Length: 102
Length: 413
Image 1 (cartoon, rainbow over the protein chains, first blue to last red):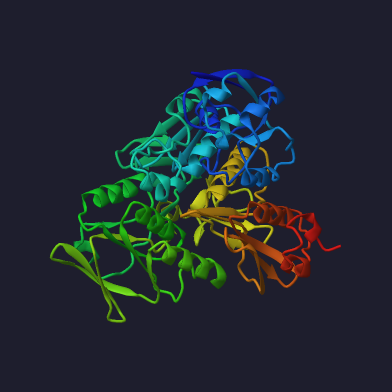
Image 2: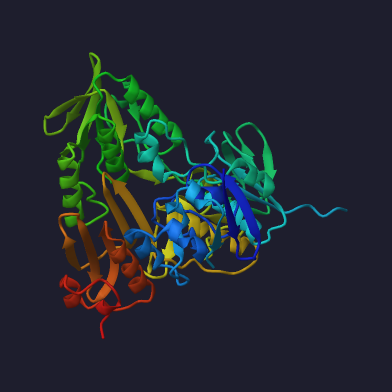
C-alpha cells in the first residue's frame, strides 16, 4: 500500500492508501475538495492541479510537455505543479504530500 | 406546525445533474437533494465510452463519484427510474412507477438522445446500435466479440462516430464510416480539420465513404445489407448509428416551458418557470462572449452550468459566462477545441510540425479570434483560451509565421 497525503484549501490533511490508478482518481473517490477531474483523466481540463512537496519532486518528476502547457491555464502554477491525473500510483509515491492548488 | 423541508429535485444524473447535486451541498443548500435517472448504472464519465471503455476489453465504467459520496452528502440517488411528468402548478414530479416528489426547485439535466434516421428496414435489424449510454457501448462490445466477420459500419462521421470507428479499428474490426455530406465533420468544423481526420482514418485503415446517403437496410443471409441512394451497397454485421443527438425536451414541453433547440434558459440557467432550471446538453442558452444562443454537447458546459444552477438555487445571483471547450481523442491524435467558430470569415492554419503532427487552426471573424482547433498542440489550446478569455487581439501575420512561437508575443502590440 502506498500512502498519499493531500492538504486541501481548508488546510485539512487527509492521508489515503492505494495500490494503483491515478492520484486524481484516488482524490475524487475520496472527496478531496478541489480535485474535480472533470475530463476523466485525459489531461484535457486542468481541474486536478496539485503542488508536490519539493522534497518529493525529484522522485515524481516533471510534467510532460502537454501537461506543462495545460497547467499554464491555471494562474497558481509553480515549479512544483502537476496534474494529478497524470500521476500514476506506484511505490515511488509512498509518503508524498500534495497540496491542492487554489 | 413543522416547516416543510425544502427539496431540490434533479432529473438526469450524468455530468450536469451529478455535479449540480454536489455543488448544491458545497453552496450550503440545506434541503433535500433528489437525483433521478433512467440509466441503471452508477453515474459515469461519458467521454471514455467511445474510447477506452470500448477498446480496452477489461475497462470498467469510470464513476463520476463513488456511491459513498452520495450517502455522505445526503444525496438521494434514484437510478433506473423514469420521470413521466412534471406538475409545475403543484410543484411535483411523478415517476412512471407512481412515486411522486414535491420540489422547491427543479433542475432538468435530461441531456440528449440519439437521432434515429429515417432508414427503411431499420426496425427489422437486431444488430443496430446507438452511441449514448454505457448500455449502448456494452452492447456494441458484446456484438463485436460474438461476431465472426467483425465488419462494422457507422452511419454518420461526427466526433463520436469517428472515435468509435477508431476504437473498433484498434480492436481489429473492419470499419466503414458512411457520411452523407461531402466531408466528415461537415457540420462542426472547417474543411482543413475534416481532411485531416479523413486522412488519419484512412491511414489507419478505416474506410471513410462520403456522399453516402443510406436509405434502406435489410437482413441478408447472415449480414446486414446497407443501401445508399447512389446505388452502392455495403455488407456488415454490426451497424452503428452516429448521426447526432436531439435534446430530451418531452417532459419540459408538457410542463409548458419555453422550448427552442433545447429548453430555453436565461443567463442564470433558469427556464421560463422561475422554479425550474435546465443545464447541460438540453439547455439552449445565451453565450455572452459570442452574443448568440447555443445548445452545446459537452462535458465543460454540463459541469460549469451545473455549478451556476447550484449557486442560483442557493440564492446567489451568478450569470453563466464561459468560453466553451471540447476535446476528442482518435488514434494517437489529441484534438482540443476552444471557442465557437460559427460565422468565421478567415482561417489561419499553423503547421508547426507535420511529422508528429503539431497543428493549430485559428478561426477569425475579421480581426476577432473566435476559436482554435489544436491538434497535439496544448500550447495553442492554452494560448487560444487566454486570448479568447481576455479578448486579446492576435497578430495574424505573426501567427502565420511558425518561427514566432505560440505565446504572448502573438498579441497585437
